[in-house]
Image (cartoon, rainbow, N blue to C red; front, top):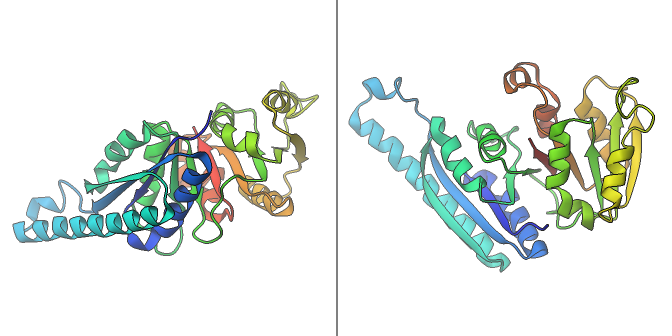
Length: 279
């Protein structure tokens, strides 16, 4: 398996540089086609703003969204044309409450979706629902890339977060092109359960499965010395000079993740290297 259809979703020229640079690098590495969906977002709320809004105000809102879509599309075309990879761009206007439909339609037919980090200075309200739409409605793996740094092509060291969950296994299978091309895959197991099915050999079955694909693996059993799992993974990624992290997304309900945080949200906030997630 390889990645042949890549997608990025852009809504702002200010945050487009990192995902555009990354998707171009991956398209070159895998001989893939890069698609950029450029959306101007209408951030008004149906049934609230529209009810008493003047028609001129509504028209102005839509016109501004159209201008944003055209601006980011021009930026995407210039960047991808300069990279020399095969690409296509599409643009349109989407209401923020209806983003999921537009993103999922494109993500469903993509091998990998490349997006910028959804949290931090300059990030807009639609960044988080775009990632969730690609993961849940589009059922696509998502590579979330930091705002700064050198774009990744084929990572040499990959850190895999393994907790025996379905989400983690899904992410590992979707990351196989990266894992097979890496020099080393480190399977990180944090405080394995004493009475779990892998209690005698944490991560052993996963390492065996990956080895049969020609993946060089090492198992790192880590103690939960920090409160948040994301802090442990980020620290271990730094200590081992990992180029990428692979993990399952949203192990708990999304509502609980939103209220309490959770490893997924914390990782997206803090990760200094690209993170591939799937659900």
